[in-house]
Image (cartoon, rainbow, N blue to C red; front, side, top):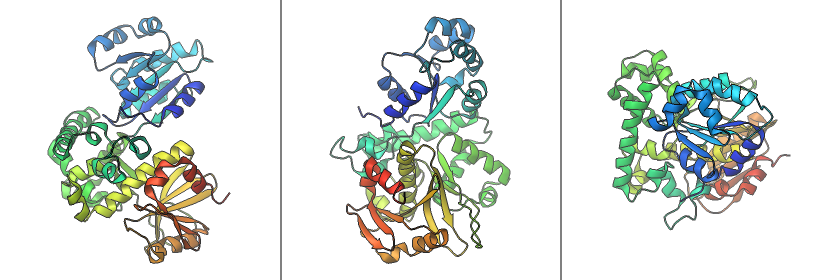
Length: 398
């Protein structure tokens, strides 16, 4: 069983807050993570009637009976428990580490927790497997394998390509046919699957709701609402552009990425490594995969860091621009086996416009080297696994 790299983060939050909410997509490993990290805590699965009914019938009495150190899984099923939980907490406000809430990041869960437990709850976003969690676990634990399979535990650990494809198909059907309708998306499964396919083919592209709306036969407001909810359940990411007054025309539309590369590949019909090697979306897939993996590592190292991308109307671009305090750290992602100085031309131009002295090209090789003028090439596997290297990278200009 693979251990998660978020244990220290969870324990730190529990020392400071009475409630911690662990949010993430379905099947990302929240339950396993919580029960491994807190094996002596009382666990309730609120999708099970036997666990939910007593809490629903008289939440105050049941919470009093349970005491502290309780895990409430799929807590969005009983949003009425949150106001009661607030009263229980306020009777001993100074005590921390009392409750752990797990949820699939539904708007109902986040809204209920935010409104009822404001100031009493901390949030921890748990993604599917990260590279530093799976490396070295077995002979097949390579960064390429994680990229192809994605990080959802059942998909990553599947016995073969067919088993993984079958699980991903069942997963997408469950999300489209059950979970999204429960979140208020009144759309046919066929239409939603078409939208997912369009988003997959537009991976890393500029967001254009009107174009997608025309293809689906709905309004752009409707498409925006669909994608808002997909983002809130951690299935897609909208990376916002960085604006600065440079006297230049800057792109103002966000970019859209699938959060999990395995789910992206499934929607693109990529089920094996050989197919990924020749697919036209290969570069966009690699970019989105590294953005999601790297941001998880950065958020553990620098929780207040903010992610952006940068692009001018002339086409100068930075794939990921991380704002850490007053510093901006630019990353460009390349699939080349040995990126050269020419591969960093757009990065250099953007660095000059932003007056940045250092930038990084991240690639799938195993050697770090300089391209001159402040640009360093870094191996992706090492950057994602070495927290010391990552901190040095983020703080190089200090």
